[in-house]
Image 1 (cartoon, helix red, strand yellow):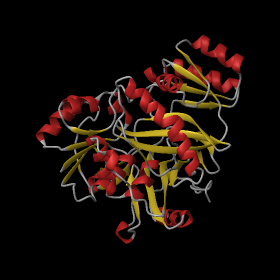
Image 2 (tube, helix red, strand yellow):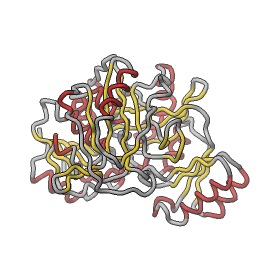
Image 3 (cartoon, helix red, strand yellow):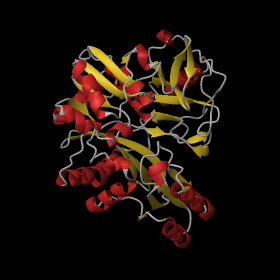
Image 4 (spheres, rainbow, N blue to C red):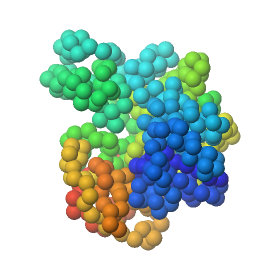
Length: 419
């Protein structure tokens, strides 16, 4: 079959890498893709948020299946446009994707479903939000309501930080995403990611993963989109997974069905675990990045089968055969990230043919005058699997040491919580 992946980051490279290994995949396209994705798919110049353009490409190239990687096309309703054109599609509708596109929507959904989450308040007025902070105190979590490319959250340990974050959000730092704000209770505990596939009715939880949000070793420095991840995460015991599925995921999906907007795709539940119980931190309407990289490393070709089952409504008959192994990915980022950074610096990669249990997924790369160059903040995901997490970690860092890119930085302690 002919398959189109929408997106151009590390998550989409990992999806393309896994899907391309499945014999059902005859021809694979990615829009817009990147320099690494070009090794396993045909990259096309196409705006993934332009539903009409995507549908035209699908018709012109006899595409049988579309996988939507990032959140922006989902929020723009591209999945709806494709389904209206009778195209088999992986990814939720615009209405269902509000679980990520609006923090207030998710909080109200949790209220209706009785799902445990942090106490919160929703504001459209700066002064009212500031009054709440002054009354409620710190620590407190300040979130832009809309999509802010993973950057619209401030964990404020003091009132001054919270008030400054509110000034930024209502002042337009995150554009329209910050026109509304959600203030949340600060939750203690350990954060972990649960990924659940659903076709609107059936649910299939995938292996757990845990990422490292802070920029520097020891979980220091500013929040980022994620500096590394590993799977499975020991904090996600079977008991916690079952509790999260029963008390959080299943009731929320049932509430969406009840509203006439069933959710189809992958639901990413960010959970805070404390004293053996999970509460919801947030939902995302797509695979996490870089968590997707470790999940795809472990799933391989069977990923296509379960994504298809979601789109076809046959997930109740699908399974994933997880090997008793571990995977770990380390993000190599441009110096200065998550602040300002330079683009266009040269990169030289090792020959990965000698590393069958590893891959370097490209998140922000391009080819300029025949040279691989950095083209983003998070640029490479050096990913490896092993019989143990320590083995996966050692393999990933050994390969990373062979990457020649002087303008980069990375964390040296990915996996430390489990190890």
